[in-house]
Image (cartoon, rainbow, N blue to C red; front, side, top):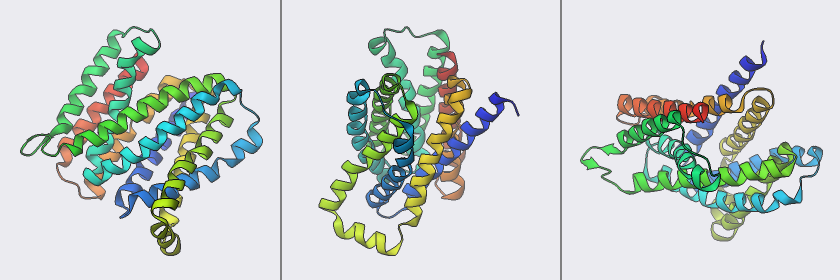
Length: 282
């Protein structure tokens, strides 16, 4: 098997895992507790990267802490998104708007210019997002169904900037990711322990295994992406990961019985195609 083919397979599996753990959060009754357990499980999975990965350059520390700070708002926005909207609606909006925002911000934070393929990708994602926002009764009958997923997209774009700069400065990407997953657990865990201790205890007694499995899946998926990038073309791996948008739409409409299936799947596919054009064309 060629390295490029193996990288493509790993990226596609990682996309499926990402859509899967988001579906796990969506179907849980108490999504805050589920997200907390998922985060802790992912943090525990990252310990070997810290122990055996070696040190990171201290110049990456501000970016690491900045990413952890933004991830706290990401969790809050994601939970609110799945309370307000379907998986097949919220996930494509959040994941699709992130590369769109990153590309639009690139001229400001990296001094880059937008290429013709990137402009095409922006147009495709914008059309897909507009189609997702078209709801019965008019454009965004419930503002929360748009606001929370788009806020999630903003946090994704923001922590991606921090992590891009942090990984570059760390000199040790696996160890950086290990520290990120590990430190990520503390803000949300501290909040839940202080504000919702009984709910956490009740879930730990009755059934923490599904969200814990989600945490393992999340860590495994991110690890696959790192491995794929290590010997495959990074832009191709990133582009294939965007297929998670289509997978989430299919899971929501086919497995969870969410309405407006064909239109949402088509809109999600348009968002994913635009993201692929952005990644490869950029």
